[in-house]
Amino acid sequence: MLAVVSESFDRWPAFPLRTTQLEHLRWKLESSETHVVLLVDDELVGVSCSWNSDAKVGTAVLPVYNGADMAIAPRFQGRGLGSRLEATWDSGESRNYLTIDAIASSAAARHLYPIDGPVIAAEAWSRPIGVRRTLGSLAVGAGRRSFGRHIARRLPGSVGTAPHLKVRAVTRFGAEVDELWEQASTAFDVLWVRRAAWLNWRYLDVRSGIISVWGAWSEGTLLGYLAVRGPNDNGVAKLLDIFAVPERPDVLAALLERAIHQARSEKAVRIDAWLAPGHPYAAALQRARFFDTGVDQPVHFDLSKLEETPEAATILSEPGTSFHIALGDFDWA
Image (tube, rainbow, N blue to C red; front, side, top):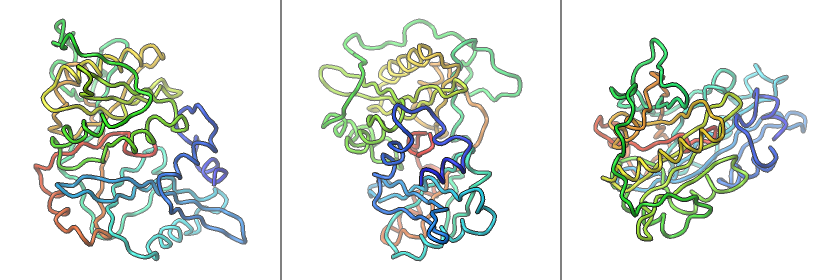
């Protein structure tokens, strides 16, 4: 499997690791019990990995299938074998799950595949991503769309962080983050379930890559966390996720300040993030001088296997639905 993905992508994964590629692949495969491989004359030439989690859609918690690495060995490409991989998934026993897909641009040209069945494109996400912070000069290139009117201005002093608020590194999440989930998830209609078990696997397993996680604490209570992937070969760091209790801009400001400081210390030239329009964290990122790159990344919801929760289709299609979908929700970031 590793040979196929390594040969099929220019770089796999697209970010630096602390461990070997093989250990990273093993880490990724642990999220699901089912993956598909394609053999030709007993030679493994195709791979389609699944990456499973749970998502909150309204009041329901639904199992989610995220398409992860799909690859055909280069010498076998162009023969319709990718369709055979997809057909293998479709021929399996139907289950009740939701598919959420946002295909990485680095893989789309070579391994783009259609999503069949009833699909809802999140039209409300006219600008779902592109929140970017330059770490050197704040000059904005011509033609780039500003994410906020304060983009070119310096922050006016303190943002009012409470004196008892402490930001420190997280090496393992426990019950405190489950309590945070219960409070912070109420601000959104649709988001991945961010409980300790998933967060520890996604961000704190050494095999996941070079990721730093911080928590904001006050009087022993976790009020928010943030995860940032270290810079790639182009010096671009990724704000994989930020999650905090509602109505606490000081928590968001403290976490963002720490992330930017860390990115600078690692010689990053830019830090990228995702936000859906109307996201309650948008003001905090504007104050931290992030701006909109003007690049669209469509996110698709495939309901063809979702047989037991029909109300999810209504929630996902309503213009007023609030989303929290971050870069870290997908395997390629």
